[in-house]
Length: 293
Image (cartoon, rainbow, N blue to C red; front, side, top):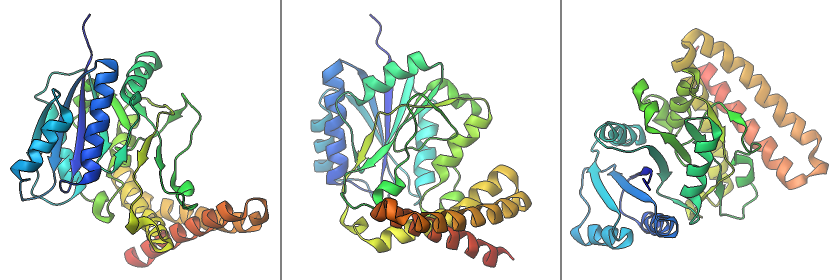
């Protein structure tokens, strides 16, 4: 029986323990369901990894074939575009993007594979859950009804058919100036080109990271969401419409911030962080008006 060929793509700044653990997870997926997997790795660094580190990669992946590439231009969009260029030369049916700071269960790939075959869609997105117990992370987790149609997917959990590459889109280097948003834009553009994106409640899990275990990181993250919004809208609709949308979303974020303060007694902790998150997105949108006036 012919096996579906799956390419797993990972971009990383450097060789690290979280990356190594993810490779172990990938092998567990392969050995548990006898999958035909190949791994593409792009290190976003001008320095090559050490020979002993490549031996670790080979050891963790066992017999799974892999290729390592390097992207000297620093920026996640450059690294992901390097992946897209390499995918053109490979023979496969499905592709999966994963972040190097996540974990996956041993049935992760087979779940997406079975789901996409039944969905009638060429792109499957899923949630990324934070392993941290900090309550503010719940505000950042996307949560949709299973099998629902969504407008975009994230590269921390996306599974798609090779055929979508015919659109020849690239990840935006402009949008990613604050560290994220380019994946949202990439898949949103695909959805506008007629490629349905279906939600599968098949999560990845972001590893707990010390530098994110504080309220300062949470506030900065939401502020940058506000800043990034106008960049995404500009690439989609043009600058003038993006300015109008920025104003509308600014008002909406402020409204939601006030709303969650008003219903604070219902769920004090979660509603407090929701209010705070939306307020700092409002501030990011407000800064956009000051910046572009």
